[in-house]
Length: 476
Ligand SMILES: Cc1ncc(COP(=O)(O)O)c(C=O)c1O
Image (cartoon, rainbow, N blue to C red; front, side, top):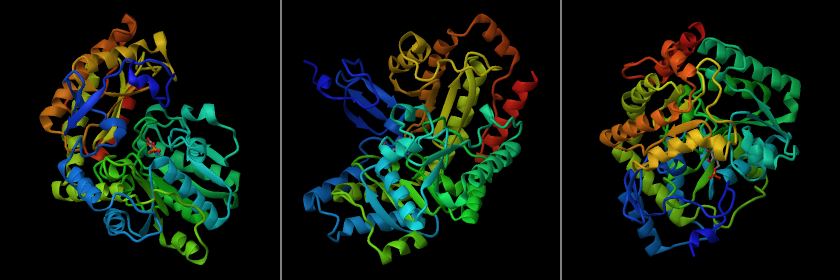
């Protein structure tokens, strides 16, 4: 019997599966039971920021395991304190305290609870294009269709539209317009919901699994200002983008913004031992110096997880991982993916920053109809299944979500490995192209994709490129 069949798998129809079974890994590679090597272009679920089996993290875990494997949260612990110190040191100013959890969704639950206890208001605003986790509050805050099956409508969540020029709901044609209109819309939502009823606003600083959407410069600052003006707690969800993924320590750093609460997980220790947490600002910390914080977890600040964080953050400093992630975007992934987009008519959009990118596949560049519908399975998902097969059969482990190929290698991936991954994506996109009608393929030749040979691109330049791409498509 295949023992994998005894495991109940998250987000899946249960039953036998055909997936690679990995037995070991090293750096950007995983090795399956047959000894085949796969280049990991997913960082799993975007968490192995330092790749697999990083020696510094493994050593830190081993050392802590030899000394003291576990300890209840009520006791003092040097490794827990050291992890908190290292996290606070790289966090935006004013976030001086850490509540440790065992993952992202749990941390979101605590951030929202802290906000509600702090200001006594019931509602929480969240973006439609978002994912915040799968426990009760976080799945209700999640804006994308992953919420639907669990939504009871009873969690006080109110959704709004964030900026997304490629599929603008505001009819914008420039990035500046999209930013201004998205902020005006958010202000209307706040005013019409009633500011005194809104406890918090939660926002991924770069939208991750719901589409890799980089906010325009100034948007996060505008959100910060609106929250301050209306006494709303600004919670930055940095679970996926925190700890270097976008080429800065945190996504909010791109706009020089400090939230009131910042939620992290994944990259804090590359996921070697489950760890998440909430960074807490002074005013909210103050609230709980007058009354106890009425919640906790048995494994809050687990020593092995904290040791892994100490090892990971130390390695990130020594290896200059954050700068490497920025360069990965500007010099390798950005230009490489834009070039692929120009070649393949099934690519509707390429967007991203640092070590987090997506290639969005469409039937037609003008209508932007997704190559597969939301929640597609079986025959309806054939194009993306073909993409996955083309990648896996050539030794590339992709991250495919809906009609998008997310590109998120380890931040320390070598240039040669990144180029090899892009070359395999080139073949996989050719497989996607075969699902287009000949008319759509022909039209795409006259309807330009992203500009070729754009050269090094910065965070701001990417947004500018995005804007030019959209203008080109609408006028042709
Ligand atoms: C932005 C964001 N928030 C929250 C979560 C939930 O984290 P976890 O899966 O660790 O519970 C995720 C998970 O992917 C995420 O991407």
